[in-house]
Length: 288
Image (tube, rainbow, N blue to C red; front, top):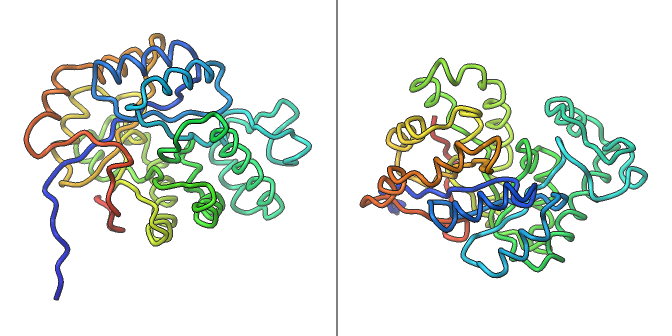
């Protein structure tokens, strides 16, 4: 009998979402990379400060950058007439995550339009000249049952090597911080449903994922105490911590990434800062 080798390390990716959304977001992300623990950033292709973000990243290739697919809470790349029923006349997907998830799942007439939009966003990202470090998605939509099927089918053509997990350990959050986590349980369960359906099929294709992602269940309350308690309680493995730092509304998340206590914690033996390119094939088991 051959046993899988146990890796006792805690390996963590710290990712900033919405690179290119604004110059304030860019400034925060660049600083968190240079002075803090940030190792990766996701970029939606229709941000207002994308050009300056891309230029900076080309000069600083150590920051891993991936595509943030936008299929909810944002604007499309294609025209409304090209993806009828998916966006309105203002190119908006709308802000109803649950409604969009339901429509995409149970309206087969939208499937070809969604595939065209996903393809358009990936192509636009690649034209920017940045390596495609990973795929993520606003609202976890990249692992929606319809959307991950596109990624699984075309990952070779699109050169996708890693994809963000959406499973955030619900029971762990509830055990450690019940009062702060309870309102996020429905979203946590939806993200777990997405992850459980997509994970085994994507791993079979050789697409890497972390064991879990931390962010959904702590939305709006991820401070230093919360994060360090989680990281100490979780079993050894690979995790991604997702934040939205900027120098305005989310300045607290920037300060978290710069916090010397967090840097000291991650510098201890058995802990390692990584990015998606460092991942080995993950297992299909999920921590609870």
